[in-house]
Amino acid sequence: MDWRNINSYSDLEKIYPKHILDKFPIPDRGYYKNVPDTDWYNWKWQLQNRITSLEELEKIVTVTPDERRSFTECAKKFKMAITPYYATLMDRYDPKCPIRKECVPYFEEMNILATDLEDPLSEERDSPVPGLTHRYPDRVLFYVSHDCPLLCRHCTRKRKVSKPDSAAQGDRLEKGFEYIQNHPEVRDIVVSGGDPCCLGSDRLGYILKRLREIPHVEIVRLGTRTPVTLPMRWRDDSILEEIEKVGPIHLNTHFNHPRAMTRENLLAVTRIHLAGVAMGNQTVLLKNVNDDAKIMMEVCHKLLLMKIRPYYIYQCDLAEGIGHFRTKVSKGVEIIRQMRGWTSGLAIPQFVVDAPGGGGKIPMNPNYIESYEGNKLVLKNYKGMICSYYEPEEK
Image 1: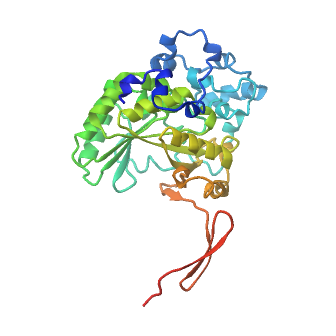
Image 2 (image 1 turned 90 degrees about the vertical axis):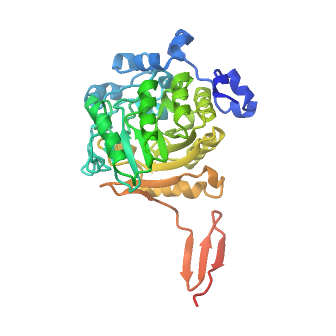
Image 3 (image 1 turned 180 degrees about the vertical axis):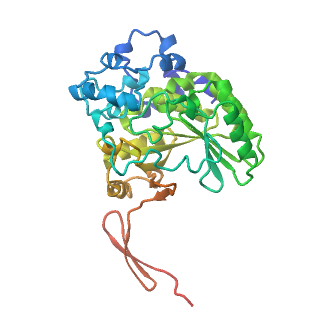
């Protein structure tokens, strides 16, 4: 099957049985019901018509007094931008809607805790040239865009995103290529931002081609939330044509909640896969959004139906103004415990803390070892069953 033959919801019937398609609802355009298809399915129209003001937001949802009071101050520190597509997924009347909580500024963002950090992962400290972070021995993070379709309220890079001077542009981009070229230990590049898929296809294609021309670069990964918040980006043939020229490409995206998984997302992801791209998902654990094992399991099951690997669940970082999204680390460990054994291991991501100060991703796992005496391990399984395992004795 060629991605060029998958252009509409009806085309998905060539690939998926009805009971699978039914798990991905066709999104209701709501306020935008009279927008012509030629506009609605155009990713540039979606970007140009993002909701950025309180007046525009009031057309989509019933704004609460708290949201109204906090909007101006919150938006000064970190702007609001919501694609029309993603806005239609918000519950008009429920301020606790999980999609709405990801999108709409709220007064709690102004509560900067003593433990909050402007750069919680020390990405700037580990930046040998502007627009590039080199922390792990064999891989770098390459920032190529300053913008995102949706400005997530839980963003760990609020200091960078939506600020034009934070992206690797022009000479800064070339210095990034030069740094990678001069460091043969670098074999894996994460192309990120902002969101690299906000760039034009020619520009993104140029970046990917330049990276592919470096002999020691083996893996090129795109970090993009466009399959979630701007799936129309992937109705554009030109981006897939560019990616096909430079494969293999890996793509990590960011689904947080089942409500954000629609037929439009499925269409985008299907076209991406058919272009030869391997996909993973990085979920952020968010209080009162997805801090529940049933919700997380539903996300992971739907990811697998879309052939996306549930890759990471991140503990929410110590970025400024997102303390209200953080759970205790023990909550994430418990979610993994509640999933283990009750679903396939294929559906269970790795829960990690991306450690402050540039410590990197540290796995957080339940402990199933009850005791360890000599060569005997006493283990407890997901049902509480006690098992003994005997290791070979030392000679």
